Image 1 (tube, rainbow, N blue to C red):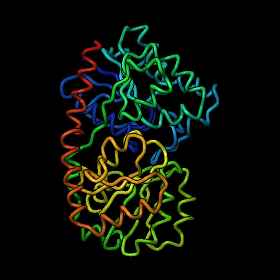
Image 2: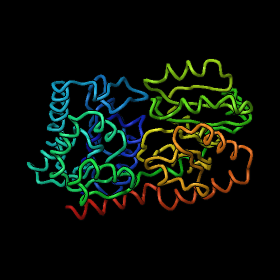
Image 3: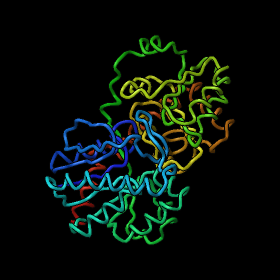
Image 4: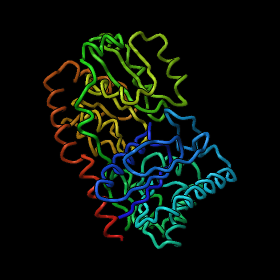
Length: 379
């Protein structure tokens, strides 16, 4: 099988980038895979074809590349981006004739895929990630564009039931072709720290306990609420790793808080933070599709405190694999973090259950097999 994956953002620095890389790695064990995407070149086991677009057009922001949100482009600029992407794709098709087209995000690339389907008679599968729907809800141009593409899309894969419901509510005609297959996590990667906990704590001058946030620094992620309660944990360091358009505001909020450490996007160094931290906090106030960082913490054996919103409950079952709180409820968030920091037995139980859950439901091998069955049925 020859699988063409159309991606919307660079392969590094985002949850959907990780999704594409890991799936392409799994697919390429038995099939030919090619990924085309905007952003810098990347060397992978599979075929890659990058498109030079500067800044990179994205749905919200990107932690490692100069980027610009789609909502800030006028319609003529969007047409130019599609034309550029299509020109690069035409070069690729001279060498790679796909049996299936797998598009990432309900976004402008869907129109390209549907056009290719009509010319090449190649089925189209789209994976819906949360940020694509975020833009659709805020910009009617993209809702109209996707509405016109729905008929030509053969299967929509949502990464959580919550996201699938949002897709179907927005596009009712997509109901019969929408299913849920979650993203996965690299279990091996998050089982091996690069340094001891003592060395890690010394290197970053961390307190005895560490409360971790990892992700984009945008208002919708709710990091401001974590900073607001940081002073209630004087014996802990609140580590915030990421970048985004809300970064300056968050740094101002944290300026007088001695126990808040704001770090840039750490790439692979973040593994040590996942493994050695005492709790991961996910304070989102928007509907996360699922939250890759949640799966990464679960695979690392670190307990999770998260907002009860969107697709987060797909992985976090309150009191079983983590603790949930109402979005924006700082007292609720604070109480749950304290429960974990003050109760090692509870922390250990939740971490053990979470690790078993990701092994059973979120291994990339299993996720890839589910998608390949969809591809084979359509072909």
